[in-house]
Image 1: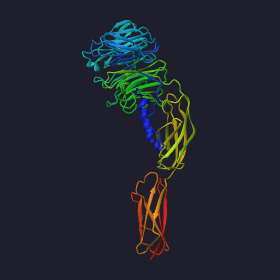
Image 2 (image 1 turned 135 degrees about the vertical axis):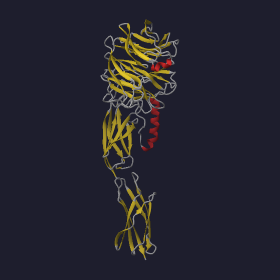
Image 3 (image 1 turned 120 degrees about the horizontal axis):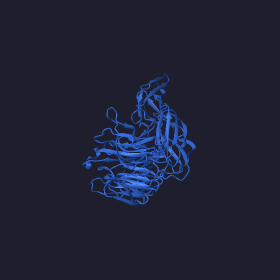
Image 4 (image 1 turned 90 degrees about the vertical axis):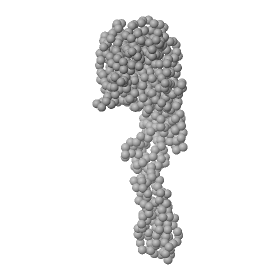
Length: 576
């Protein structure tokens, strides 16, 4: 298995090891934490059309679409909540949509010429109801006590992407054509409060696809909110992959391959005031699902390499708790989450996700269990820093300790750090918490004055957030130094040559330093020509003394906003 908390953690661990020599434990990868378990079953299918979950009998149903020919048969593979295969339903023609009745006693299966119902306890067929011929694969939804399904007809399967699709239903047992229709493989999703969403995939006949919500409480669906997403210039169109209702029905989340996870208000499908963070760079949204207990949202994606294909995080978009991240890559995991390939158990204790390989002809079922318990975490002992005197432009290590209750985490915890100075607040990234709870944040302050460091633990699915800890550091100017090498004696006839070096710690000077040179003798003090320090920090002073005896040469630099001033003197005895 190659899940995110293994492959991504390895990358983060290697990075931390590479930086450990400098005391820095900041990891480049975003926070990811291991799930309580992740069972994986290889599915006996070569194509995928639907996933349904029966939380009453704890069964998971996965359908093989197999719509390539009217002569092909189909199957529905049946699994326990633990990922064990316990049965198979075979059909005489292709099988597409699945829907479980609200009481969990019936499984409805969409086929080419009919909709078949099975007893979920025995997997025996209990009813067959004829429907208009479907060539492209139906989608099913059980909403408002009625069974809704789509019907598409074309002469050739290659026309399915733009085929006319009808919304049909069995209303009180009677086949009904609702009159709602449009192009493409329309997708249905049942939600709480007798609502049902319909999403239109992007296709050549629908360059600006729609999303709409129906009220299914009556004998015919009544369209409520509807939205198309492109602007006046035709930009921003929806690339629909999946839709899900929040547990309370107040929000709708949409997996949009072009724009990530959209969070909308169900009433008017306007954008929610607070949305979810963007998916990791390189990940394209493919699926979305809310847990039935209202705690979590799962966001599936298609991604390559070490980019996460699945994020499980709090359903509240204002909760910044770091998500669980999973990378699916290889022959034991699949490579991506398939569109509409995720469902939760009703109690939110398990997430079921279907993944596919890059070719799209092999499939896997993953069973993920988010942690059911959260533990407290706290910072102890405050923050310390070294060196004691912080200097602008030089490394500063800020150290602290985070304690956490409960069992040791499967992966290291992470803290987030910021620095606030006169120029605002600066994000310092995340730091890894070691096994003993200690952590180190390495910074390089670039402004003289007070800098306040704030360290936060945002929590994860196992630990609650901790109260932030802060410390204020006085950042001083970086020291500079001038060293002179002068002869003990010189003559007025041959002159004096003094060599020297100028060094500056901290941030590099924008230009070469220009040094002031003064000469003091029995006639007084005068200023000689300034000297510019060479790239290697060296300089040379040449002078013809004007009197005999002791002559003192003083070299100075005035400093700048980030560096202290420095000075040095040398005395030469001058003979005739």
